[in-house]
Every structure is written in C-alpha cells, then in structure tokens.
Length: 388
Image (cartoon, rainbow, N blue to C red; front, side, top):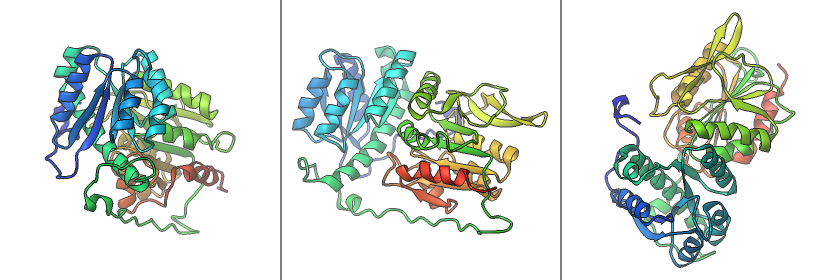
C-alpha cells in the first residue's frame, strides 16, 4: 500500500531485544526461498532457521527445529501445502502457518481451504522473482505478519511447553505479560439508551478472520433474519471465494456486495477486495455503495468507513462485532456506533490469532461484551432475536 496515505503499518520497527521469531520457508523454488529469506532476515527480530523445498521436508525439519512461523507455498512436488498443513500442526500445534498464494481464483480457493485446515493467514505471492525482490510493500507485509503471528506462536508455545518438545526460551517479561485490562461498557436495562433489537449486524475482521467468520456465522443460519455486512481485509479474488465458502460452510446467503444493490433481510454482504463497502440511503431504502476512496488504516476495504456509514443509515439499531486482526481498523467507526446507541462486541485475546483490532475496541471501553470465539455466534443469535 502506498506511503502517500501516511506512514505504513508495515514499516520496519527497531529491534525489541526479544528472542527472534523463528521461521521456516517452504517453497520448491530455491530462488524464491532465497528472496523470502533475505526479505525476512532484513528485520533483526526474525531468524530463518530452515529453508526447504516441499511439504514432507518441512515436516521432517519441524521435528528437528523449534519453529514459530512457517511461510508455506501451496503447489509443490512430493507434498503440497494443503496436504502438509494438518501434518505440520500435528507435530507442532502452536506453529503459525502463512500461505503464500497467487492472486488467481484457483489460488484463492486453495488458500481458503488451507485456512479451514488450520493455516493462520495468507500473503498474496508476486508472480515473478523480480516482483518479490523489488516489491517493498510485499516485503513489509510479509515481515509484519510473521512478527505478529510469531508473537502469538510464542504465547501458545509457552502454555504447552513440555507437552511436545522444549522450545527456545523466550524473555521472562514476554511470558509474564498479563492480559491488558478490559472495561466493559455498562448498558442500561430499560429506557433511553437501552440496547434494542438490531436492524443490521456488521462484522470487521482481518488476520485469522476467515476461520473466525466460519465459526461465528455457522451459528446464525435460521436464527438471524437481519442483513449482515462483513468487511474482511482481503484482495479482490479472495473475497469472491470467501463469499462462496461462507455460503457452503455456514448455510447463509452470502455474496460479494454490488454497488447500488438494496440491502435485504437474511443476506450476507462481503466487501469486495479493493473497495470500501458503505451503506447509502436512496429513495427511502438502504443500498450498498462501493467506493475507491483512499485506504483507511492502510486498508481497502476498511472497517471504519463501513461502520460510519451504518450509523448514518441505521442509527442505534446496529450490532457490531470486531474479530481477530492486526492493527486497529474499526476503532473509530465502532466508537461512532456506540455513541449513536448501538451495541459492540469483540473477540477475546485468548481465542484471537492476533488481538490487534478486537484489542483496540476492548481496551477503549466501548464493548458490551468481549467473548471467546465460540461464544460470539450464540451471543449474536440471541441478541438479534430479542424482542424489539
């Protein structure tokens, strides 16, 4: 993403003096492995400890090395990435896997299957070695995701240490870190300002979001009649496949949103990649509006503009939810939702792949509930079906 929108969140950070994130790079091209390794080791907080050419070699290497993050190609000889994922997680359940995927329909579909199989995230893979070597945005995004997921892997590993094999020690301060304080927003039970049955459900998510969305939305079929708007940070081809997978796995009528289409009951609208999804009022009806306005929080689609537009269209009759993701996209928009009288819930830290976005709203004190992932779907279903 362009720096003309401000300082990039993927900009290199100074060393933290913590133990480095330990990475394995898996790709059948030795040239690409070398380029990825150089991009990663340009950051002092990352160390590539293994570089191998297929899924079976990755499993063998993982049995010998302590790894936090695996950058995994999809199409490889001997054993492909999709086949390798459950085997890798069986060896090291705490490891976080980032799929390197091309921006094609086939690549997006396989990537979504990889996420369902346990991969934590994906990164769009440039189509040539020249692009990988020269794409600063790609390198910054790769480093940022590896560091965020590496921190999550270290926390998970510290909880299960000794069950599989010893992990490289991490700093005592890191292991003793207490969860940030969360203050819930008190909600009056009756009268002005009391929660009301929502006319719309809005969800924002990023890193780890597809898996979280599948879990949450699987509870809503047949129990929620309100329209659901979802902004998930994804490129264009991937959002097309995300909508298809939500329809198949969750039984909801999900589709990529189209500019100008009316918002109707019982439908799930996904913000298309590279477009902000807004709600406009036209001839007394609420309709979808897609814009190419500048990225917000370095993202397009972004959660904040969606939330702001929802407040203007639906007022206080909104139930907003922020799921796992890096950064703090959604904080400003959700603050407007709450100030208008709407209700906000967020995913808790323990169940989040990355507690950036939900952590930002939780620590701001604007949430009515901060819940484990498995409790969010039932909560939404109950809240949405309450008496008006």
